[in-house]
Length: 301
Ligand SMILES: Nc1nc2c(ncn2[C@@H]2O[C@H](COP(=O)(O)OP(=O)(O)OP(=O)(O)O)[C@@H](O)[C@H]2O)c(=O)[nH]1
Ligand SMILES: [Mg+2]
Ligand SMILES: [Zn+2]
Image (cartoon, rainbow, N blue to C red; front, top):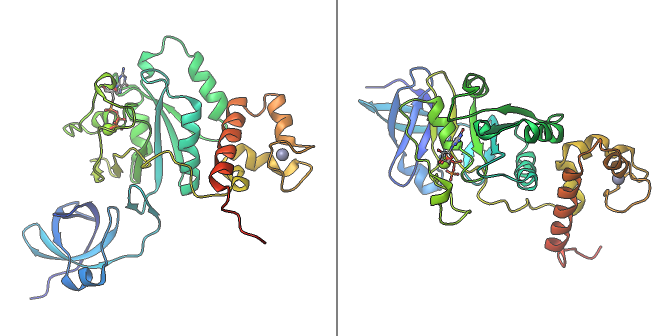
């Protein structure tokens, strides 16, 4: 008996279960990994496309893991198309500095990033929103949403449709709530900020891909295991701020770090308000942090 080979996405993989969603039928198969893979230390990760052979009703055996287009490290997910970075302006009021740290990590991953501003139902005026657009709107797509009232859920659905996405954002901004709103019956755990013991703890911890009935997958994760800056040199940081990358070429020195060099065009743009001062302050703060981190690491040339 030879069964037909099928293809699918690994949507869950933990010590006990490997679940593959078949590419066309979207039927779920509980799969086994062949012993020879285990011996070689070959393991799939969530998001992998695998080839498998059905072995019974709803079960299968993985035969091949296809090459990954990309791979996020923490949380480990393969073949991600985009990051949906969730933030909010009240409850909790996420500072632009925190948002900037998320954005640096997102830039480092090289994945397209969309900013979703949740909880707009809590805003009594558009002032804070306008500030956000002014700061990020030129370089990032921003979408205003409310999981509570359902505002702009149709737009958010279009963002997710047909793609593999990962959520990112501080604890309590409403990542799970947004997915619950988009996928009735999902019932992901959400929790009140007031009930959270410490700010660093996320309600959602497991990595798995959720399937939308309109097509597409999403991982409900905090996005990054921590807001620790990537392993880069201070001089490389400017490549991860889009506005610095675009305008940095006009400085007097081609290797200008935009800190205190003469003839710095970036500083001019900050003076005129063309580059938001909060972004520039975030840059300086992170630059200093990377300098500290890299102290003593420099090799003799
Ligand atoms: N007013 C209002 N509250 C919301 C909205 N979306 C979520 N909340 C509330 O915000 C709190 C946190 O929501 P979660 O969905 O658990 O947040 P999360 O981003 O998944 O948090 P972690 O899993 O810890 O990373 C819950 O009490 C939600 O009810 C919204 O649009 N408006
Ligand atoms: Mg959550
Ligand atoms: Zn400069």
